[in-house]
Amino acid sequence: MLALAMLAAGCAAGQGVGGGGSSRPLALVGGRVQTAPGAAVIPNGVVVVERGLIVTVGPRGEVAVPSGALVLDCAGATVSAGFWNSHVHFTQPV
Image (tube, rainbow, N blue to C red; front, side, top):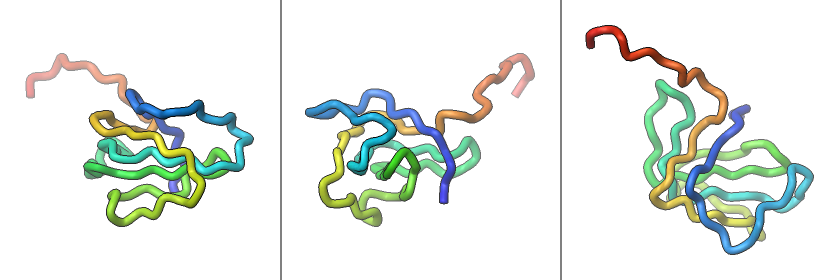
């Protein structure tokens, strides 16, 4: 299972997201999902979080959103791992 922290920038919801102790699953749906810097991007992806842990990541057509989940529409946004080395220097000729 993926042990990633993630960031969902620009996702919209009709209600607030519960705290880390919430028993209600959270589904980030429709965004461009980047699980790691070298991994292929998942367009129109889904990330399911239960009890503060990411339990499922994949294409929208292959991931079932749990019943009763708080669904955040992330269309047009990027969902990515929150902790990866994004510090780079663009000083080398490429």
